Figure 1 (spheres, rainbow, N blue to C red):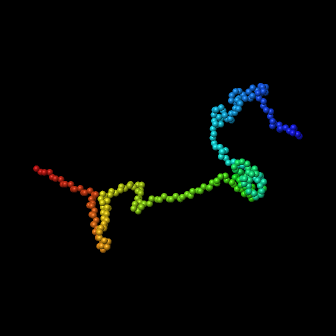
Figure 2: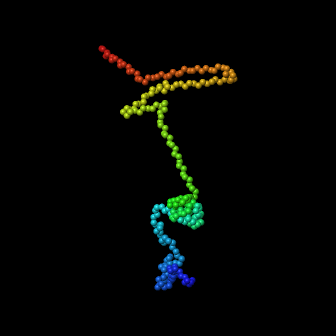
Figure 3: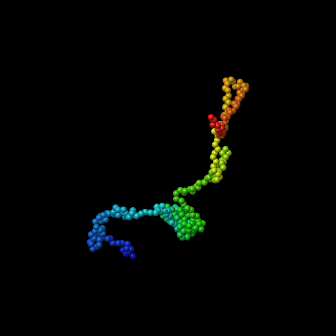
Length: 260
């Protein structure tokens, strides 16, 4: 085979479409651009979805639900079979996986359990599948999970305080508990207090003793006998008026009519 015998693969080369070469060619006159207008001008390009200024279809359609594409967590997969290139007992971290070309792009790496692992490795990745973790630990390896960003501390549960029992109303000794009347019994009216009851219970307040002032020295006052205070007799209580009504006077005897 010589250089002039080399040819491109069939279908790799196409003949250029010739425009404006007569009506018989199928691409004459307007050269495939149609009639006059915006699309017939040179350099014209209309973006996808543009409908001439009217409300486009993508904006007329209702949007419902939640789209998780902006918040989804994506991993770069790495199978166990590809980890056999590392030495036995080696530590495989994110830098080693990216340097060897096993993980390209992305921020997180996930180890999958496809294939058979033949070496004992300590692997550091952001996630492990259940089958991959089982195979790694079966050979005595270690799976360590990496975290992106600061690790959030576990929330501390608040300690619930015991509620104090409400104090029951206990009657004071000065106020004895009142007995509730039975259903059939009528409530008794409170007894009327006499008007002079307060006057009887009131007692005159004792007068305070005022020591006599003297300009004599302290020695003379200490030698002098202490003044004797004479207690005044208690005031007599006011006369009590009986509340019972007086007995009516007997009726007068009838008088005889005068005689002529």
